Length: 253
Image (cartoon, rainbow, N blue to C red; front, side, top):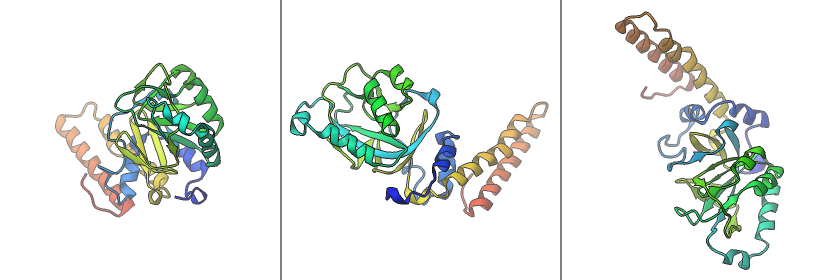
């Protein structure tokens, strides 16, 4: 997707941050032609090391590293500067998505206090890396959110191998400029064609839950079991009817 033709405004992105990633998924599955079971979110387990920062939303900028291999710095000593210029040239907000070729081993981290502050200054809001991070408190203080496989102590031979390319992290393929929504549950990669209607769909699904099933479940104090079950069934039926009317689609609920 061309970065000059993004369908969402900055205001839209700020509003998407108001919901957690599962809520965004609930809206997305109503508007997409992709398979919600296989084409949406990370397949492998990841960990949000700054859950207190809430969700992050941004466009992917990509990087491949191999901390165990010292030859990359010798082969292209200017790769670090070139990668930073690539990052600076892309419009934000940006999430740096890093594929670590050493996985499942973790031999070094691309992220720490210095890199977090540096890339925050270049318009990046965080990272998703299938390797490691370090300097957790300092990264948090920089306002740079991270989803990663684990923590580690050192950086080893971290040096950009390639960037601006397709990467695979936690079982999910990510292209440069893909829209990402991420929080403590994991992350979603949202296709360009699904982005224009995403915010409206997420809003509707959240409001629909709050107007039907959730109040029915919480308002059952003093009811008999049969009365409660009848109320829940009626609320589920209403929830499903609202979805079908809104999105004009059939589905199992």
